[in-house]
Length: 306
Length: 334
Image (cartoon, rainbow over all chains, first blue to last red; front, side):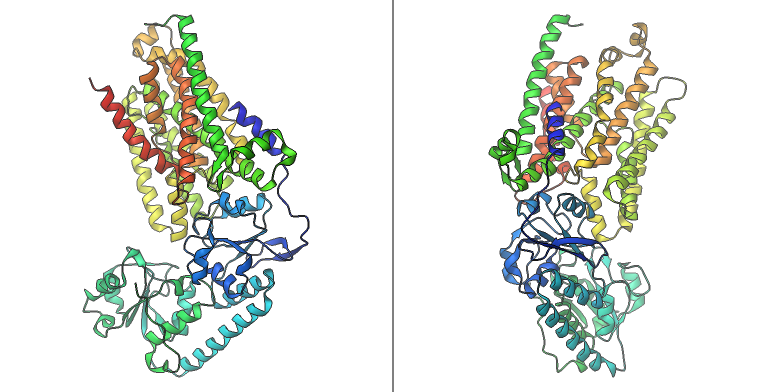
C-alpha cells in the first residue's frame, strides 16, 4: 500500500504524452464536442467496425493502426491490430499503439473509455449517426478529419444517386407490405421508429410492423400472429443461430402470411448493423425483397452464405 | 489457549514479511505486464531514470496499470477482511462480505445510474454506494433493535434483501437496451478496467476503517468464544458487533461502487489463512489485508492478459475461488 502511494505521488507529477511537431486544429464533432486534433493525423485507431469500413472507403487505411474485434470488412481490415471489442475496448492496447487520433461512436463505445483517452491527451473524434442524413454528415466529417474530402464527397454523392433512383422506383408503388424486421431471436427483437432500419424499411417501400413502440421492442409469437406481417426480414447471426434455424422458427407458423407466401428472408447483418455508406447495399437488398416487381433494374446481391 | 506474546509477535512478523513480499511481487508484475506486453525494464527506467522514459509507456504504466493495481489491492484487502469479520461475527464459514445485502443494493443503484445514462464516475459509483448503504441500514435495523444484532436474523435478512435486489436487477436488465446491457453485465461480474486516477483518493477512506478493524482484533477473538463468555470478559458485545458490521460494510460499499461485484475473494482468502495460522484475529487481519490485496492483483493480471481479450476479474476469481474452496473443504475433512 505504501509503495503504491509513493508511486501514485510520482505519477501525478508525470507529464502526459504530446506530439510537438504536428500542428493541430479544432473541430466540433457530430456529437457536439470540440476536439483539438492533429491537422494531419498519422496514427489512427478506430473503435467500431463501421468506422473501419469508412476509413477504408476513404482510402486512409495507411494511417489506420488499430481496430475492433469484429471489423471484418473489407477483408484487408482483418489484418489490422485488434484493440478489444466495440463494447469493451482495451485502453492499454489503444494507448500502446500511440495514436494521435481515436475515432469513436457515441452509441456503443463506453463513455468511460472515451473520458480516459481524453485524460491521457489522446484526441477522440466521435460520430453518432442515427439516420441516413446523419450517416452522410458523419462521412463528410470523417473525410475532413482524415484529409480525404474528395473521397468522402464521392461516397456521399454515390449514396445520393442511389437513394434518388430508389425513391423514383418506389414513388409509383400501389401496395406497401407490412414488414417485420427481426434483429434478435431470443428474445425476439424488432426495430422501432427511432432507428435507421425503420427508415430503410420505409425507403424500400414497406411499412414497419414494429412502428409506434420503443427503439428495440420485444415480441412474442402471439403478437406476431396478430400483426400478420407480409414480409419478414431476419438479420443473420440473430441470437447466434444459422439462417436455416432462423427461418425454420418462422416456418412453424403456417398461419402467417409471410410464411404462406415464402417471404421470410435472412439477410447479412453486417449490411444492416453498421451506419456506413454500405447501408445502401442493404437498402437495395431490402427493396428487392419488399418490392420485387419494381427492383428489376437494380443488380442483385446474394443472401449470406454461412 | 492464548498464545504467549513474544511468540505471537514473531509469528506476526514472519507472516507480515511473507505476505508483504507476496504483495510486492504482485504489484511488480501488475505494473510490469499488461495487454500491450511485458516491460519490466521500462518500469525500472521509469522509477530510477525518469527523464529517459518513453512518455507513452509512462502513461500506460502510471495512468492505466497503476490505478488498476491500486484498486485491485484495495478491493482484495477489503473483501478478504470483510469475509473474515463476517465469518467471525456470524459464526458461519459461508458468510461473505456481501452477506448483508450490500451487493444487491449496490447493483440496483449502479444499474439505475447506467440506465439513466450517468457517467460511471461519480454518478454510477455514487448511486451504487447509496444503494449498498440503504440495504445495509435496512438489514441492520431489522436485526438490531435494542439487543446485540442476532446472527440468524442478520443472515436471513441479508439473504432475502439480496434475493429481492436480484429480482430488481433482472427487471432492470430486461428493460435495458443491448449495448447498455453489456456494460451492465461487465459491472455485475466485477470489472477493474474502468478506474482512473481521479477515483483513487476515494480509496484512502478505506485506510482508517482498516486500522479500526485491526484494533478490534482482540474483542473479535473473544467473541469467537460466544457472546456470554465475551461479555463476561468485559467485551461490549453490542457495540463491538455493530461497529464491525457497519465499518466493514462501509468499506465493502466503497469497493463495490468502484469495482462492481467480485465474488469469492472474501471466502477463499480468510479460509486459506485460517488453515495456515489458526483462528487468532491478531494474525488473521493483517494476513488477510496483505494476502487479499496480492490475490486480487494476481487475478486481475490474469484477467487482462488472457489471449481472448480482457475479461471481468469476477470471472477469474470465481473460476479460481470455487475449486480452491472445494479443495480446502476436502483437505479439512475429519
